[in-house]
Image 1 (tube, rainbow, N blue to C red):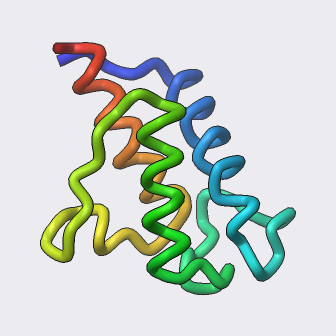
Image 2 (image 1 turned 90 degrees about the horizontal axis):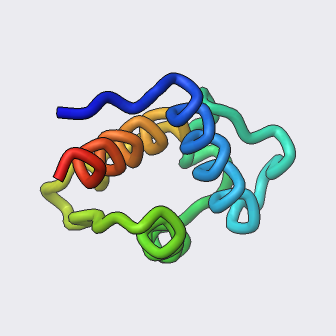
Length: 93
């Protein structure tokens, strides 16, 4: 499987932060990899919209249901890592 370059992962993290920022109700300017999603006021409806934007802007498909990895993501960084893994898989295909 192709590895994502460190710069690619940083770019993906930055893209994830910018996609989340408009939905953050608490401290949108303070978003970072360690930011807890439940602390910024992102509710489940917002998260679904974020998932759609991630899919659209990064050209990936996210399996989002209650049993998926994405349903249990706690931080912005964890979300970015999962997205980067999907981008890697797409590049390898």
